[in-house]
Amino acid sequence: MRNNTVGKIVTFGEVIMRLNPPGCNKMKQSKELEFFFGGTEMNVAASLSQFGLSVKHVSNVSNDFVGDAALACMQGYGIDISHINKVNHPLGLYFMETGSGFRASQIAYNRLHGAFANISPEQTDWDEILNGCSLLHWTGITPALSEGAYQTLKQGLIKALDKGIVITTDPTYRSNLWQYGRNGKEVLTELVGLSTAFIGGVNEINEILGTHFTQTDEDFINAAKQLMVTCPNITKVYDKVRVAYSVNHQKIYAQAWDGVTYYKTDEIEITQVVDRIGTGDAYAAGLIYGLQFYNDEASLRFANAACALKHTIHGDINLCTVDEVLELVNGSSGGRIKR
Image (tube, rainbow, N blue to C red; front, side, top):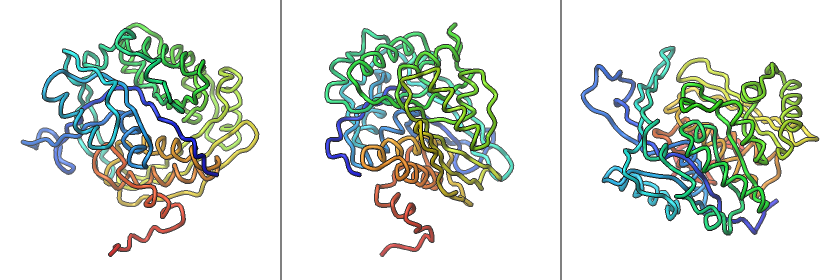
């Protein structure tokens, strides 16, 4: 079911630098760090651009050579950066130690006073940004960072909803980020209420609504129904389920509720994880891409395959093409060399 009138996709969120020791080294044993530019919404934007869609990212970066490098990185992925501001605050960053086997990866953030945390509604012309836009994507990381980020996002969501634009949200709740005085669960409930599609499952719904649904298929449906009652603009709920056997061995599947029908994909097992960072963003990008061209069931399979493939790519961003994702969707998982 192809939609030949796909408009521009807009993403809004922080651009952040990741620094980690090579391989699975701990910081204390390494004398060098490698870096990547990412950020949850930017990761989605980059993947969608790799899929061939027109994507604009809205953000702040630092007014220095680090910010210039971040802009060049985004341009290299094909992202429209015309509404990214350069400001006199440092780029946010995080440090990561990659785990192995039963040793978990660890992350330490330095982002709460960075360039994006200092964004304000006055810096963001949503009328111009949303011109020609068919879909706006945001995550729960963004309103957690600052009052300015929350107010800027809220303004954009109100305008997008008024224009009839599809609004997808991955409302990740990380309690340690909410340090500027707002109640994270109240804010997320408000902003999810201004969105039309929810990318999350029972855990996210429980955190936002204070409910106690379990991980059964039936409770996923009941949780989705409760969310739609509380946030009536939400018409569909899409979830990614992960089973982790170790850092290097994972299994994923996807499920959805569209208000009438429950969908569930087959499981994909990943036995040699290269990098887990950005896998949820790869799922979101795969879903957003799929919804432009396929029905819900096919979109869910595409998203699950995109997520699985990101586990095999070092860095924050899924660099796979549509054809590579479709190969896995269609059962090609043997890894045979292409000549």
